[in-house]
Structures are given as structure tokens and as C-alpha cells.
Length: 410
Image (cartoon, rainbow, N blue to C red; front, side, top):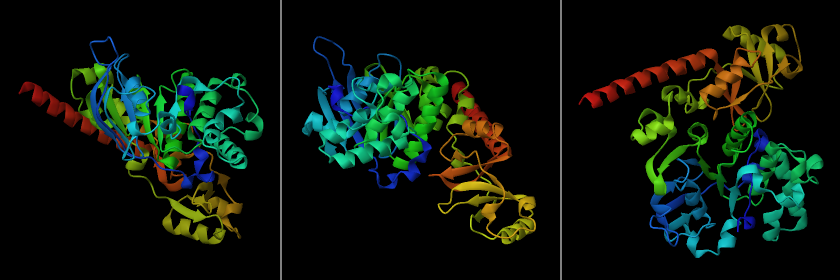
């Protein structure tokens, strides 16, 4: 039963401070000729599915209702038993393991978190570690760590019940529970379908932040192609019977859809959707002048003057951007540069897409926004950065349109 496994859904950007660099990374999943046929039905629900899900990637299964995408996902952890075929998780045959043991090492995420209403938040998060017979002090520590990870203060939320939380908060607890036993694999079944659009967007962003730190292998089921484009490292477009019509990176599907079925799923504005598949870290970023928090203010002022730059990005001991320091701030000053300037209030992950970068810039008080990878500074994004990338995408789209027209004429 589903109650035997971990259930959850989103997380926050503070993973770097949670000791999660020691977390278990994802493993490869291989499905070989996987089939599910129910008794009395002439047509298989899942027919001969073969695909490889790379370790540490998010693979989105997308398709119309009834195509078998959720069934395919549930076959992986044997919530539904396959009729035939192989499931290899990290090279191990999942069908040779006891089903309940398998599920305790595969996080499972559903709509509204799937929390047990009669259990406190702490009890929900602790469910699988208790099944694994962890020591009580270790469980208590892990519960607090997971709640902090998903942005919920343990002191405030530990003893509450699910009914006392908003939908978004329940989803956060859900992901805390899914991650509590540190599984290498997460299965996520339309986890954001039951929340409002604003909360949904935030939870999607938090999943990307979390994945940047943890590198889990995530199978994400959705009927929303835009969500698949935003989250997926790869997308599998499924037709009836879980037939894989196209399996590729989002940019390739948008630029070169395999057939009319895929084109119909993409919908209108495919070229503009390329903004969602171009990650900020993949475009040319500004370097800027950087300084360590303990650097001498006069020395940094000299560096800015020599570089003819108006300000520096001040980094803390972990290379995280924390402060702007302008030439004017530092003029005639002595002591550490961190004593001067203004805090940096907006940063953006390099994993975020160009659309998110544009929104961050429009909401910022500065012309540049620091870009981070695993919360460490890697450069600056500006409107010029985004405009240049958009122009390049337009040129690529024109080239693709010309090639497609030529193929049609042939």
C-alpha cells in the first residue's frame, strides 16, 4: 500500500547550510520491456516500455489523461506489480527485492502531500526512519533538519497536525517526509496540481533549488507540458499505453517535435517556451569585481577605480554574495569592506531559466542580479544578458523554421 512509503513534495534554497552535501545522490533507473496488463482488459495499460532515466536527473513523464504515465511511475516502486519486464534501480533488480523494503528507499510524492491526518508533522516526517529502526535521537535530529530544509521552523510546526497547515505547507512537509530516509530516487505524481498558481510556481522553483544540492533521480509525472519544460532535464512524451513518442531534452523537443502528436502537446508559442529551457548558467554572464568580506576597503576601492567599475560584489567565507559595495561607499574608508555598502537582497540560481532571470531583474532595485550555483557566486545576469540570449534563440528558431519548411517542400 502507498502508506508503506515516503510521501512528500517541495523544498527550499537553504540546502547548502543543512549538511546535505553528504546526502545520497541519485542512481540510474532502467526500464526494460516493462508491461502492465490488467485481467479482463484486451489492451495493456503499459506496453513494452524501455527507457533509461539517468542518475541525478529530473525526468518528466507527460501525456494526456489515461496514457499510463502514473501507472508507469508506480511500476518503478511496485505500488503496481508489473506483468512482465525488468526494473533496475542503481543496477539492482527491483523485482527481486521485497516490495515494502524497496519502497522505504524510494521517496514518493503525491498531491496535497499525502500526510496522515492523525499524526503530527514530526510523526509524519519520522515515519520511514522509524520503519528503518533508526535511534530516537537520530530521528529527532533528522526531523528538524528536514523541516528546516523545506523552510518550516521545527519549533513552530513540529507538533502541528496537517489540517493546521496550508496546502503549500503540507506539500513542503511531504517532501520532508520523502527525503527523511535519504533515498536516491523520488517519484512525484502531479504533486503541484492541487495548489494555486503562485504557490505552484514557488514550489517548482524550490524543487529546482533542492535538486541543485541533492542530485536525486526524480521521475515527475505531469499533464502540464510547461511544467515539464521548466523542471525536466529530459521529457518523455507518452501516448496511449505509455508508448514513448519522444524522449529528449526539453530544448530538442521544442525545436524538433517528433510528430503532430508532440506538436499538439507543445501548443502555441513553442519558440517562446525556449526561454524556459535555457538556463542562466548556460549563457555568458558578467564577471563583475568581487571581494571577500574581510578585504580592506581601501584596497577594494583601488581595484574598482582601476577596473573602472562602479561597484563590487562582496562574498562571504562560503563564496555567497552578501553585499554591494560601490566606489562611493568605499571612498576614504578603512577596515573590512563588509562594514560598508548595502545587502544583496536578490540572487538567482544558475539552474533557473531565462524567464525567471528576467522576472528577477524586473523586481530588483539593481541592474544586475548575482547568479549562484549551489548558492556560490558564479557571475551576474543583466537585461543585456537576457536580451542577447533571446536574440540567439530567435535566430535558432528562424533556422529551424527554414529547415522545416524545406523538409515540407521536399
